[in-house]
Amino acid sequence: MAKDFQAINFAVHNALRREEKAVTIEQGRQRNSGRSPVLHTLGMIVESILLFLSGWLVIGVIPCYAEERSSSTIVEELLANGEKIKAAGPSELINMLGRNADASLAAVAAVFHEQTDQERLLLLDIVASLGRPDYILADNGRAPWARLLENRTALRVLVEALTDKNRNIRDRASALLAQSAVRRTLSAFAFQIIEAVQKNVLSYEIELLGATDSLWALEYIRSNPRFMKSNPVSTRMAMARLGDGESEEYFLREFRVTKDPEKKAKLTEWLGYIGTPGAVIALASELRSPELVRFSGEGKQSLRVPVIKALHRIFPQNVLFWNPQSSPPTSNDYYIPIENWAQKYLLIQWQHERPPFFWVGSFPTPLPVPQRPAGENNAH
Image 1 (cartoon, rainbow, N blue to C red):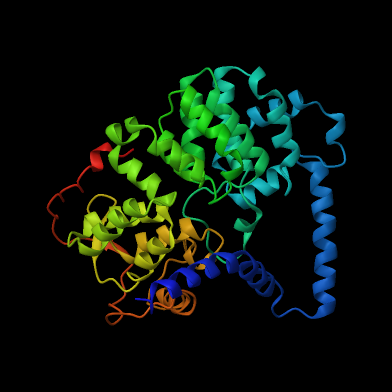
Image 2 (spheres, rainbow, N blue to C red):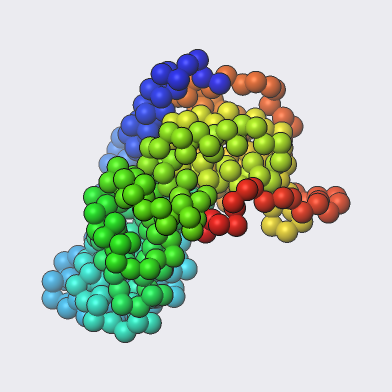
């Protein structure tokens, strides 16, 4: 564990502030390593030319021509390619729509409410795809574990959809915002979100209020007993994320004392949503956990994998925590840089030796069905 609480708190906040600058520098270093200054300059010129030309060739975003095309026309083209856009990875999306999605997002915002219910529902997923942050394009053989959503225009479209007349559209918008919005990006929309929760039925209302990272949302939850009555676990999670110390300690205590690996895996996921300094330290302290947990039916995975996923949710820009999908790890060489990060930036001191390497595999015999954590059935 860290030396003391003050040092922990300082270290975690420093890590959060350091994140964006450090990753930007590292991505630039990786991209330019091995290049001479002349080749680097030529490469930048060629890249700029290709990006300019792509603007004339792609659908949706044509930077020098966008003003001559109506919002309705742009949205029609987006809808025609909606399923492809939803399924496209970051690089594919760039090839389809260009690097800058702002023109397409602005068009959707302008005519969203003129579309049919089915079209609006599809547009929400299109908006979520277009709203991905640029830094997920890092060329390092890794990708985020889940969708990330950061573009302000995309967030505004989704927030406004929380008051849509169609319940399915409201629920889809609330799910995308609660599950995909990058931390602290919803703070500017806190009052709109609180008002939407007051006036409409939303499936992910508790998680969404927590995702605002706003003290106003915390006070609203505290003043409405219905949240705790209907969804006690989700309500405690949201309150813990919003700064309620008693709720935070509830989850940290459960995480520390449980001996059930399956329950610990679920608590790991919850701590990733909570994301407080205490949650970060608790998660990082398990980066040498020897526990194995159920994964995809009869499969198993190291508990370190959900721990890394949870840290990814808190530190979405740090490529160390991304999914190594193109080259699955085969040794502890994968875990060591992550451990080093925790030691350097969080002052973690390991309580036991690094366990033998394990990533994912299959159990030789069926495991007993684990008991659910108390109150889990009430969480979304």
